[in-house]
Image (cartoon, rainbow, N blue to C red; front, side, top):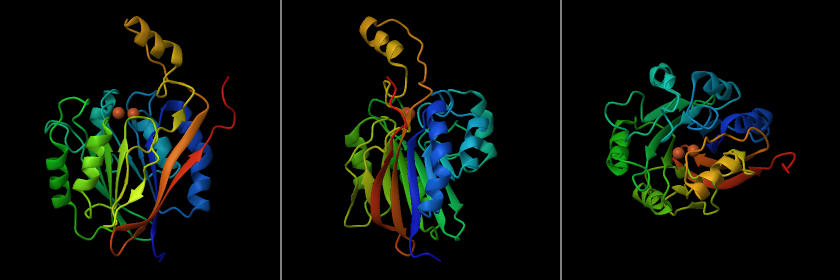
Length: 268
Ligand SMILES: [Fe+2]
Ligand SMILES: [Fe+2]
């Protein structure tokens, strides 16, 4: 058995561009970096809006172990019926009590390590959700004691709220990280407690865009303030991800490293 669990955390995967880049690179990364576990945020998998079982299967087939979600969770209405079919899907724990799906999952690696993944959504600039701090207490109380790592996807806009969650879970989670802004931050840190933190993993999608959407429509909406169709950019994705080594005996993160794989060609 290896001494550490090697984990890759991927942020929001944006549509076909993001899926295509991961299909090209993830199997090699898993092999070369001897990854035990991969978690990614799937809220933008389907053309930028939500998840379907078909696009989720594409990601599971190339080595993603768990797909978290966010405010776009129900953009594809069919996902309401499918989320309960597979325990590799998680959605924010602090959605309303009427929401289908689960807020945490535990999955086992090939080496027999049990990895818990909790998904939360912020309240600042994000809509009316239940309290993520109360929700995470409930999740931690429900998760079995014998897990070897605890990962927390805090899907939120405000860095302050994400940092708040990082400190709230100090010493209780292996990694607290942000998703949703589609922009990576370079503030990764391992606290003295062994809890690692990063404000946002960043999008895996095209950065020749406005957070993954075609520039013209998104810009027109800002300038003219009239309704516009948002369309996902379908090519030229960068992969942003964060790699962690976690000590299964203590659940502490012992190493953290950001990974950036740029597109082969920068669009003109
Ligand atoms: Fe997103
Ligand atoms: Fe989001």
